[in-house]
Length: 325
Ligand code: ADP
Ligand code: TRP
Image: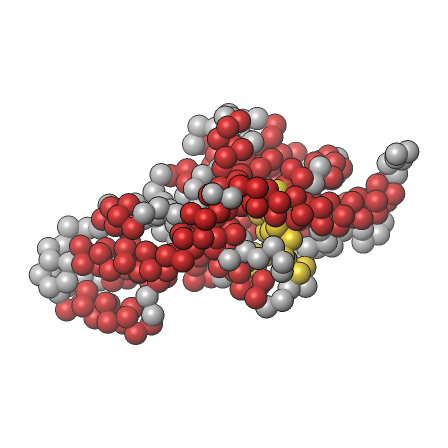
């Protein structure tokens, strides 16, 4: 089974990224599948204009992934821009993509609503993502629920190209979404997202984690009063970290009263800090060793390019593009 997924280097990694995406990447890697994981820096160019920021964030996501357990000996880990064939395939897919399909894409509408400029890059974002996926003959794409529509668009485009050329030149992928972590809430209760400024970052000091957890929005039920754990942002986050026994214990305390949101926030911060302690230490080491991080990406890029080029030879021939180099 060929697995593929990507993450944009558009901000610091947060616990929504971890539970919604990265943990699945790690599991699939452990299960011995052929995994391709990459940093979507061309996609990030649709929203990040500062060259120093984009370059640094690309390396930072690489460090973060490696620190959290992505193993370059067991998967192909690379930067999107090290595979220029992907933009070539994007163009070919553009030529079978109805404009109306892009107009229906919710992420474009959301981003415009948030004030991003309506560039052609932003409009074409799902087609580039489709190219990312099909160029590696991917079978399964682990993502959060917000990406489901992009996988559907990918399938639509793969079908359109296959129909246009009259053969199964592209493989159709399936999304892989774990329902219980499909949407991790942020400190304000909306979906946790870099762009909403409501994240709990993975790589920060234990103190900063405590501070952030203390900022989680709750209602004003007094300390003594019974509380409903199922309607609390802190409890929703605790559920991701605590064992089932501890979840039960804390839920009982909520319902009994005398247990304040402050207690729950403190426990959450402890659990976050414990969970990421080892990864934070590895991250600090990787910060000192940029050449290792670059070497990993270079090697991954080589493997990814070889796979992508094989697909492109098939695609060019199928659509009648003559190359003479
Ligand atoms: P952000 O919304 O912070 O910009 P990205 O869009 O870069 O995050 O998402 C990277 C990956 O993490 C995607 O697979 C996405 O579905 C997943 N993800 C991001 N935020 C969440 C969340 N709050 N809950 C679940 N998964 C998430
Ligand atoms: N759009 C994805 C996100 O914002 C990132 C991404 C780019 C991606 N290309 C991909 C995810 C291919 C899965 C497969 O999270």
